[in-house]
Length: 377
Ligand code: ADP
Ligand code: GN1
Ligand code: MG
Image (cartoon, rainbow, N blue to C red; front, side, top):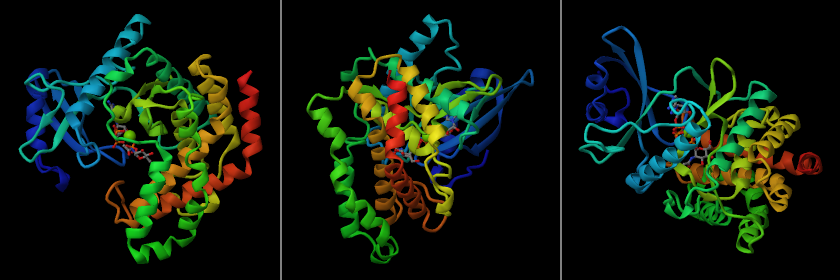
């Protein structure tokens, strides 16, 4: 099967290392790039078995520039998915569909390192599932919120000390701000001129950046095990029932704040526009979606959030949106090396949508607070 992505020259080595064809007595009939993730190189592998049934797998080349230690990252994922599987089984759920499962290589490892030094992993494809890039209706978003809330609850007794920090300071917004300011100083001059308004918008909000970490440091917010990348396309829905089925993309499961998970979902899913929508008139915070998610997340967390966490939910939404905006903008200024881009000024367009949303959240602050208050009782 030919390679479809020049960045993945050794994909055939990886496919061979997992020995799927022999294990299922099948033939590889499709190997193609898959999904819309910004970080890893994802491929769909489709096999036809001798009895003419079909079996699919997700093969991923992990982004080694971003995740500095893929073996430790995979150790996290194996531990977390083992933990989730235990809970799902004890509840009579389906562990093949309700959690990711790591497929072992022929040598029994959870990943494969190819001759060029790239790291690969395979997950059985979760059958009869749908991945959404945009909320179809408030019910989807509510369901995703319940799922993300209960995901965090399922990890409440996970031994957080055994988790490796796969990206240090991932949601430390002050640290992200320092990186952003350095990017403004060292980045491309022409690009900085193009983004003058956005740079000013971001610099103006420096004082917000330490709000959550200060509360954490003061012991006013609890450290939990969180997902940290809770956008809508990191959850699969059941194609038959329409319900949220499985939380995926576990690369950043680490100790964090519940507000990170809440906020990142709102940033992506409660926007009326796409994350990279060039027409900013189409981008605003949909308060009915904000309400649906708030209700679902609190239900999913089932009473485990403290009063302070609940009070800070709007700030979680605003800060995660702002933080993502400065990350997109820093990447734009320094040459688009982190997030995959597919067109000119793609990261700038992304930063603009995030800042439009931040401004809209500031305008709708009292309404967001009232919604949170309504569900906090
Ligand atoms: P990235 O870190 O690049 O975002 P993800 O792990 O989120 O990579 O995977 C990219 C996409 O691949 C997902 O958005 C989803 O559409 C699809 N995907 C990943 N794992 C599975 C799986 N086990 N079953 C079905 N689809 C999957
Ligand atoms: C990346 O991997 P993916 O596409 O689900 C990023 C998130 C950003 C998101 C913005 C490891 O998520 O932090 O919020 O893009 N993941 C990493 O869409 O940096
Ligand atoms: Mg993803």
